[in-house]
Length: 162
Image (cartoon, rainbow, N blue to C red; front, side, top):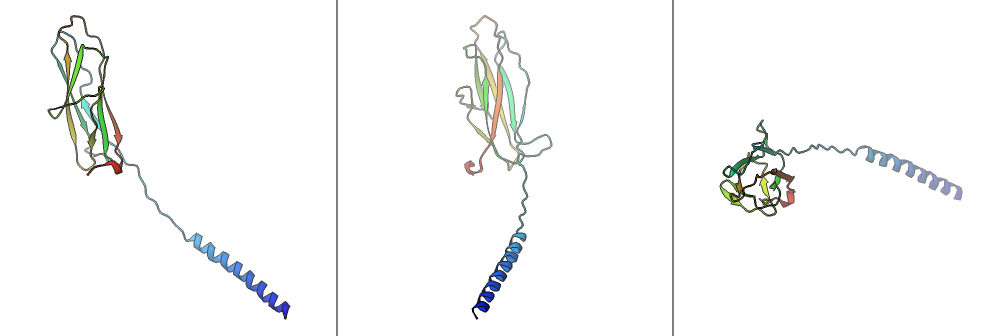
């Protein structure tokens, strides 16, 4: 009688192990994940003169710059971008700068503007006028390069203010 009870328990235990592995195997085989992902395309386009020649015999110069969130195919950026403008030149009193955005003068701090936002919803073009002011009191030649750079980065979704 004891032998029969032990045989029944062993057979029940073996059947339980066999059935549990089959059911776990079916559970893991039916797990399927579909992921569709893509990379958002940031677009920032700059338009302006490539070179501007300055000498101390001339009046102040004006450099026009446009910053756009779309390309020549009218495709708009897929992410919001923050950008600022930096003017790089030798530190001296011979040349000073003023920057205007849509006719409003901007503050320049350490030769950089504040940050601006290019949205992804609509076509946007920000127009800038950079005045290069020459010191008329100097008689020597002005020999220096001036670079105008635009730095941009993707705006984090959490930081975007609606």
